[in-house]
Image: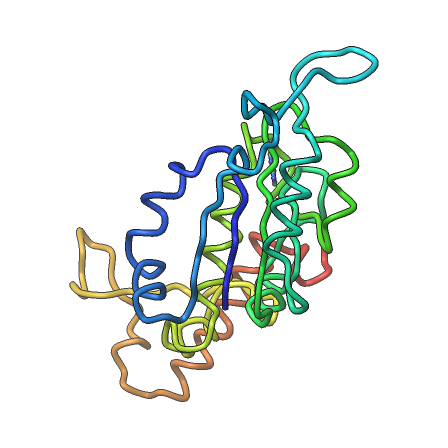
Length: 222
Ligand code: ADE
């Protein structure tokens, strides 16, 4: 998979791309991530990318020209264009699976108080990561990119993500490691029993219990 990200703040991606699983996925050529500075596409002599809103009002608005030129430059037949905005549809694990199957993603990070409405026409999908406002789309884009990359074939052990919370609309079951007794808090006996069938049953029941208690909405029960 290839991911092209358009941003006014390329440095915000430095640590994200050079640590842990994302770094390994890039090194192992499971994914290519290119960060593009929107300013580089500006045709303005002062490299301006934003201006005042017509009709007045607070803040600056991202102009269409640099974004249109960047997307048109990067777009191929199999490209899928995503615009990060709090007005988009709410992101979830199902969407992450869908997007992990795409060949090429172009992700536009909105910034400042807003972007020119015409930029929306470039997007196949507008995505929000939740009902709160970030200073820009960069962190939202990293959330989405991270969750997609870990699902690409060969990036992590398939078993690991088959057990993820939200698969089958259930939260994950509780897990424990050594020691068996920590400050009087004991690992449940069943996990030490070696009886795999019973352990799997217990885990499923725990997942269900946890989901009922914490996220009944996932079971359609809220
Ligand atoms: N940009 C600012 N806030 C955002 C959000 N919640 N989701 C996606 N993009 C954003």
